[in-house]
Amino acid sequence: MKKNRYLLCLLLCGFMLYFAVPRLSVTADGVQGIFAIVWLVFALMVIAGNLTALLYTPKRQIQRPQPQGLKRKSRSF
Image (cartoon, rainbow, N blue to C red):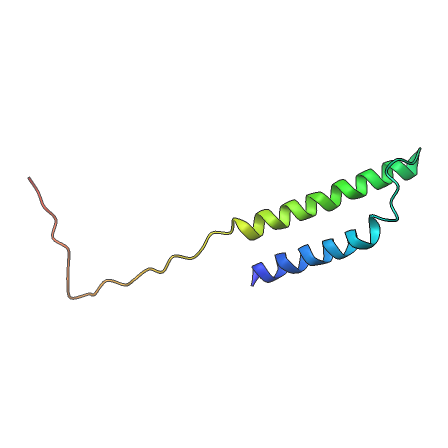
């Protein structure tokens, strides 16, 4: 279920970047240039965080219950 959320966040971030990058001027002077750079850095952080969470989520291990009738014998030397 969480993987769907990470994928949705990635798609939304990509959608926002698709519209924002042509309008942002990184080479502009003053506050406009600083805002563009900071906005792009935050967008890249969002992408990196969601990709990390999507790719490195631990997978569940299936544990098989042991039959109750059989007990393991321990060896002693």
